[in-house]
Image (cartoon, rainbow, N blue to C red; front, top):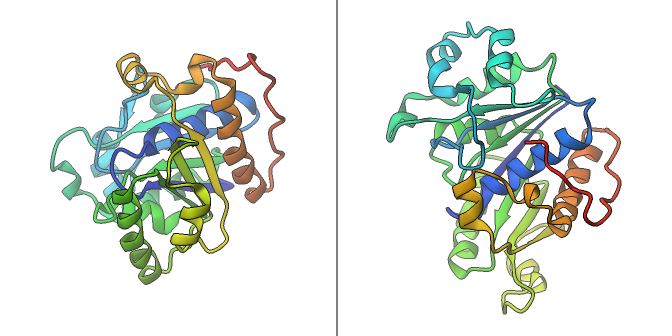
Length: 258
């Protein structure tokens, strides 16, 4: 595995699952030579935008704990397309208490051969063992923000925790971005300790309820502007993994294969 990338939200409902899954979909659809594995490691199912789920981490919990997972069987059950794989998260409420951070380390070790990029949705809670394990193991970490005072305040607390855990952030995503919002990107960059790391803007898309009902990411609706914003994040990830970047999408040509 060339790279493990973790996405974590500064708070709940900032769109961490949508952004991280869109990143995985865009890479897999645009680079058929790369095998991309997307895992929900956040204490929830993580299936809001997938129509079919072949395997859940809940089903392989004991095997992960005892390090006896069959890689071939796991990949076959998780396959979504020829080169995109998805491992669903924890199905039941309070079931996340039965997991340990070491399980994510073993999952990454298991996928070392055969998978190029492991992209993990870490949700918004660092007290979740799967999320904490993924954040510790990741080569790159991206934090999802929105233009809300409550989110910015929570990130200020989260940053202190990152520092205590010696976790560096590779970049930030200002999701659900509104151009006329008083919480401008320049204000956020001045207020928060972003440490000169890139801040990517992903516009607010008025398709949230429809996308959730139809279990689709925004990419599948042909929004070339959204695809371009996700592409900028993708290219940073590919550059860090020393892989060729994606060319700019021409307007109207994006079609999701999911």
